[in-house]
Structures are given as structure tokens and as C-alpha cells.
Length: 111
Length: 113
Image (cartoon, rainbow over all chains, first blue to last red):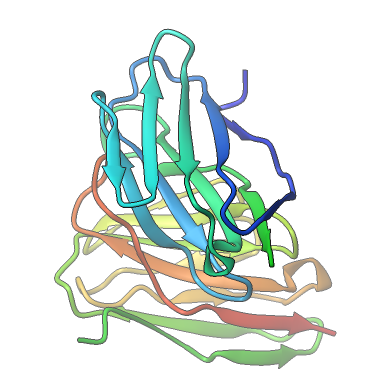
């Protein structure tokens, strides 16, 4: 299994739809997970952290499934402004080595 | 509240030329990173640093060099530019390693012709 793997998409959904992305990871000892958002021709920015108990922020919900080694991001009531690439980020290994970024899943919300 | 600042934003280089991408952060972060992102692709780590005086190779270090003489600055040197180095380069920083938010600069678009 690759360190981190995401479905590249694109996911084309209508406004108001619910969409979910999954991301698998290989390091079973990983403790910290994140979702970053990257707009076209812009830098990535933190969207939310993923906690063991799950994490909800408004229309966004992130969940962790340790047994199957994947994290998910659920977006409810999609807005046009949600169109972006969503990057899954996981630890490479414990200690000082940097986090590993997935290649991203592209979402287009259509009016 | 500048965060991570990188310059230049755009640059065109001729094959064989050298240049330095500048990066500075004002958040007193220990960790700094350089990534490159090719069109439609993910981020690839070039070099990173866990503190002043300490640097380490990432996934794609060939053709690049870095230094970290201060906490704030982490310049990336391109030696003998090649067309394969045409990319967007992002500098980033974080307070620590695992579990810390990574803050990115706005990117530097480099074309080698």
C-alpha cells in the first residue's frame, strides 16, 4: 500500500449535494491526520484536523477508521465555493520526518 | 502578519542558469520545507529543516540545495537549471513536526526554457 492514496476525481456534483472523499494510508502507527484545501493556482491551506473521535466543522465532517486505515471527508450542502482540490495529509513516520501529502481529490460544484 | 513570504513570484530561467528562491517566515517556526508541484500533480518534498543549521533531503532533492542559517530564512538554490525543474515551488513552515499545521507561502512559478 502507498503511504497515502486518494481518488483523484474529479467529483462533479450539483449545489446542495453531499459528497465524500476517502484517503487510505499505510503507516498503522500514524496519530495525526489532516485535510488541506488547495484552490486553483493557490497554496494549500489547512481545512481541518482529523481526530480519533471524528471532527465536525459546520458542513464538513472528517472521520478516521484505524482498522481499515483510511480517513474520510464529508461535505454536506455543497456550495460553489467548495470547488477545490482536497489534500489528505498523514505522517510519514513517528519523529521529525515531515507529513506526507496525497495527490488530492478535485471537487467541482456545479450550479 | 506576513506568515510565510517567498520571492520571486514568477521567474523565467534559461537552461544552465542558477537562481535562489527566497523564503522567510515570521512565526518563529522551527520547521521549514520546500515543495514543488508540477501541473495536475501532488506536492513533492525537496528539502526540509527542523531548525537553524539542520537540513535534510526530501523526496526529490537532486538539482537543489538549501541552507538554514537563521530560524526565519530557508533559501532554495537551483544549480544548472533544467526544463524538468519547471514547476511551482512552495515554501512552508510549521511550529513542530507531526501534528502541527503547515503554513504555505503563495508559491513561486518557475519556467526553465
